[in-house]
Length: 439
Image 1: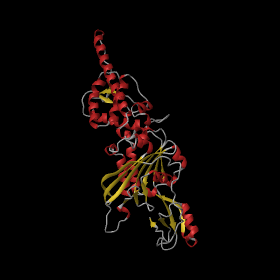
Image 2: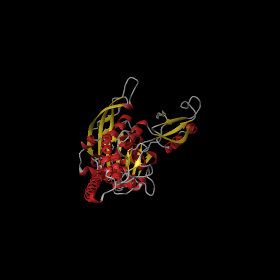
Image 3: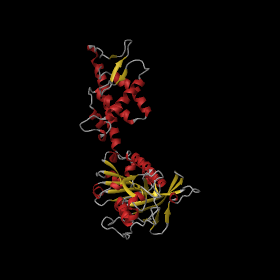
Image 4: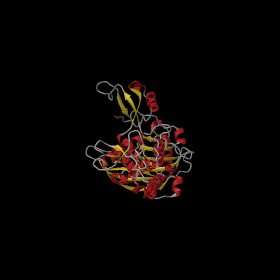
């Protein structure tokens, strides 16, 4: 087993060709790295490989890195496949080692290659061989450094108006998903037929505090409702969250961040102050801590029932078909909303929202679409004030078939965190007008 044998460089050609055909940049990068280290007689540790090949975010401080073991195992299998039917020496990565070795086949099985005896009168050949090996090492190191530079170059999506503020921020990231409060009815017409408690979502009872108000205002029904402290997240929100995760994985700086995922009901003022925020959900699931400042800065007014948006300038209303469907109709229109806004303490907020489920899924996909994000342009003034974008989404039931941009305009961001704006008078729950939606 001799890492300096010239056969290593010769045999590496077939392996590199197979790895290039597989289009796995990481496997090819790992192979070149291990080969260069083996030619220099070094055996790197898992931490070195994680830092040099997979970038620093994959290295686990003070411990082993599972990424390294997974990719080394995959590389070992590739080499076994490449040299399975080849004659002559083959490359091999022994179990428990992180170096490339050259072994020769024989009738008795694979044997370690011994260094050939070098006659005294072939010193010139040795010098030429040394030059070839050093040249190969130099080329491999240049390739490795080039790949690391490409890895660190910010991708185009990170430089778009929507993502650049978050990509440049050093704050932790909190992803908030819109959720909804459920309470239980234990008797009466709305209870389950078998007498079991029936979970109910009522838009007019968005929190457990509102349920307490309901019980106080209607004592006759106070014992018929119970707080089970339950929240639910819609299926469309989960799909949108999956799309957002794929987008974050494209952005190296966000992929390296400390990311916390919480339901909207658990958002606190401390988080809103110390972290960058991404909200994913419908307007109906947005917490008041985010909704009130956003509505004050926005050119839209959110309808009280969360079933539409009204443009403040033109008074035109944008309503989702999904909110007014009957058995004879199918949804054909929804609206996707994106907003980027400065936070209250030098942080940044990104809103991925909609009126209905179809619009939310489309909003998440649009936020990660480089071509669409480039159409938003880049205006330094908008970065300071924030901006909002509204798309009309064409749907057939739960399938989206296209989106058209309707608005791309600056937010009125000045002072939104210093005042509460025009607050509507508080009107307690009226049980005669509420329509509970069972779920």
